[in-house]
Structures are given as structure tokens and as C-alpha cells.
Image (cartoon, rainbow, N blue to C red; front, side, top):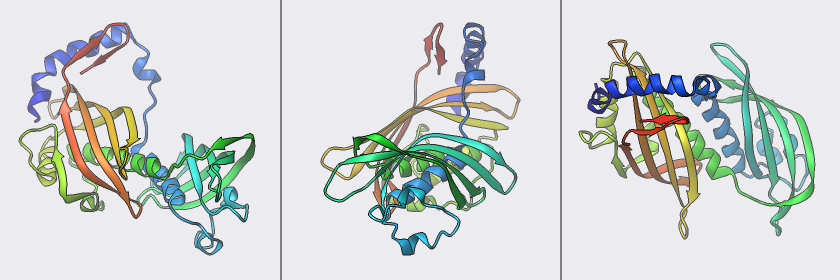
Amino acid sequence: MINVLKQWRRFTLLTVCLLLTLTPTLNAAEKRIDYPLNSAVYQWYGFLDSRNLTKEKQAQYPNVDFQELKDAKVIQGAHHLLSIVPIKQDNKIAEVEVELEFLPKITDTNEVYGYYLIQTLKLDKQSGKILSSKTLTNEKDDFTSKFRSASAPNLIKAFIYQWTQHLDNLSVNQPNSHISWNKHFTANTKFNAEEASTSSLADYFNLLANTKAKTSRRAIRNLNIKPISGTDQFQIDFEYQWSLLNQYDEDELAQLGVNLVVSIENGVVIVHEYKAKYLPPVTDLGAEIRC
């Protein structure tokens, strides 16, 4: 079991009790993100935003309506997601409703009329592939907006959600064997996980696979994505609030800080630097307990 989590067990049990006493509605009000589902949705819109979708290319997706591209001059744009709401799902298929702002990319101008969209997507839960889409609302704005690209942020969020789910799956010995992480982490990636005993991605995966937890959840907090000036790279910063139920049925909690430097190459997130570290216990009485 991870040593830091063991060392903090007594402290976290006390703080969890205090948290429940001070803010009894916090956990109930918190919205739990479905990481695989959200990853697939962000990946889809990141894909759309990174391609020139000519009529010939659109024809390759017969069950996608592409209503936002109905203007003959628009073959690419920026999908800024506002919300993703699951509608229904079974073991194979998931259906979600996506609320978003679409900004068309038009030659020779950055001032464009945006569109407010509500779309439903059907996905294959195993592969994340979009099976169909239907536009329910497509309203043009009454004013212009400055075009803002969305491809990179969408692809990066898709990666972060997929990566986080993989770490949780490893911690309960259910790895995503179909995912090839070598396309994201290369031989040149500077990798420093929160555990000093790991010196490589393979070491880190092996360590997590021996955690023997019954449940594991890394809740993402304060995700920040910003371009690095003068480069084609992005700086990503966020925190994990990591809670798990260990093999002895004991609740454990830790807080991690994560920093990445990435770029996008042919629609794939490439990690140049990955750094994670345990954060010291912090108490905000009346607000939130962070470990």
C-alpha cells in the first residue's frame, strides 16, 4: 500500500468526520464526472475542431447530422462545451445531451457569429466511438464574438479524463489494457510521479497495480490549461483529491498536485513533462478539508 496514504490514515479519518460535521451537504452536492464518457465526448469535438470537414468527409459519418456546418462556407470551427448530461445507458451504448457554443471558422476574419447548440450523442461505451448525433437546438447569436480555438483544450480534457480513469482502474487492478499510453508518453518524456520509488511510467503502473484497493477515485480539482507563449505547447495544472477504500475496508484520502507540459501532434496529446507530488494537509474550517 502507498506509504503516504498509510501515514495519513488517522488524520484523514478525523478530517472526514470534521468535514461531515461542518459541511454536511458538500459531498451530496458534488457532481461526479463520468470520466470515460466525458473523455469520449471531448475527444469527438476535439476531432471535429482539428479537421477540415468537407462534404466528402462528412459523408463518412452518415448518422451525424453536422447541422452546425450546414453553411457551405463552414467546414471547421470551435466547439466550446458548456455541459454534458447523461441521458441513458446500458452495458454497451450511452446517450448524452451536450450543451455548447459553436464558433465557425471563416477565412479573413476573427469576428464571427456564434451558435448556441444542444446535441444528443450516442456512443459505444467500449470504444468511445460516436455512433450518431442529432441537433436539437441551433440558435444563431445576435452579436459577433472573437473566434477562439477549442481543438487543443477539448483534446487535452479528453486525455486527462482518460488518464485519470486509467489510474483509478489500475489501483483496483482493472487496467485499461486496450489503451496504448506509449503514443502519449514517449522515450523523451520527463516523468516524475508522486511516488519517489518509481522512475518510469512502467514502474508507476506496476506500483498502482499492487495497491489492492477495493475502490479508488481521483476527483479532479482546479483544472487549468494555458498555452505556453512562443511555443506550440500547453501547461496543465490540476489537483487530485484521491480517496480509496483499501483492502482492510478502511477509507483513505490524499491530495496531489499535478503539472504537465504537452503538445498536440496529429490530434494526439504528447506529454513532454509529467510531475505529481503529494500536497500537505490543509484545513479550511467551514469550507472544505483538503489533504
